[in-house]
Image (cartoon, rainbow, N blue to C red; front, side, top):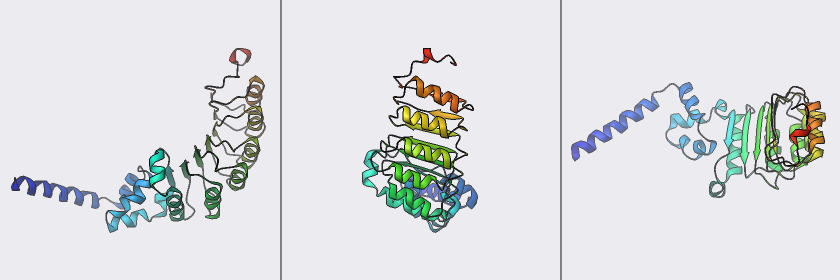
Length: 239
């Protein structure tokens, strides 16, 4: 039993030395596949070397705080952790995903931190904490934005979509799964002509809204209309 314990201990030490012996750029690449919560709550605490790597702004070009589950969103102070990650990016942030805890104040904090290089923004199930006002204020300064997801944020309406379309000319992919109607469809059609990919799951616009989108977004390569029950595809001759 003692010999087995010693061998097991040696294997652990050898494995630890292998991890610590990796080049920093390779370790950085491995860490980038982990969630932001895992890095802040666990990884950076392992050793001084990993702490140093986790302080590199390149580590925080992507901040992923989705798919954590409601329980974890309660257990962790997610907004505080997110702000900390934003600070570490030193304005290099390009991709951020936020679920459950997004607020207008957090969106404002991203911009106030100089994160104007943002190319991808995901807002998922932020419910009643993100509004047209907060999203408009943010996207007016995001001219490089290429991908935007707004999912179950019911206080976001056509008002914000118009501003997004005017402020983000490079926008190519847009997901708006948000119970939108014809106003939202017309806002997309009139202001987002460069879209390549559009997802509109569970919205309630009708064929007039769909026709406007098809006319106003001529570069579309994919269009997801699942659960859009008021759309009758048989009446759209283009299909």
